[in-house]
Amino acid sequence: MLRNWRNANLSRFYDTMPVSTGGQQKWFESYLLRPQDFLFLVIDGIDAIGCLGIRLRKDAWELYNVIRGRASACSTGCMSQALDLIREFAGRINNLPIRAEVLCDNPALHWYQKNGFSIVARNDQAVFLISHGGRKLPQGSLS
Image (cartoon, rainbow, N blue to C red; front, top):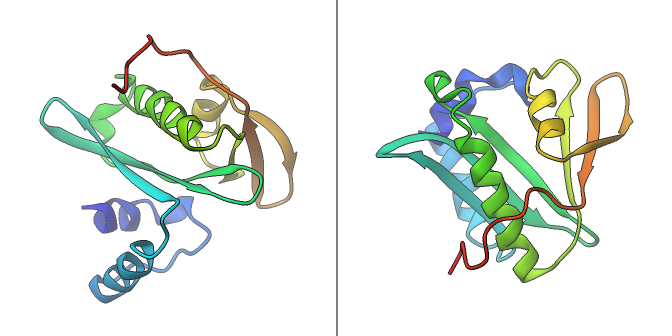
């Protein structure tokens, strides 16, 4: 599913080569060796609609592989709710800012800003964002 979603959205990634089954297997084997790297499947009801990854770097978390796999999930708020939960999860491990990097022509740039990310830099290819927090969740929402 993740490979299919990524391959359907290749123009949103630096590496625009389709991911093969073997390439996905190799990636997953290396992913399992990174203890501070988490990939979350976003589910609405019984439907998988997207994913978000977050990994701990030296001085910040890095948000990556943010993919809304089902266009029908647009505007339901599930991806934003998932991001809020991931912020809380990451903050419990290490309360650091969250960085993201998106291609300049990515239509999701507005989504990042709507969800508390600020643009800190840009170049011809990418926009660099940072978030020092987001919407607050009710106490015990991850309990």
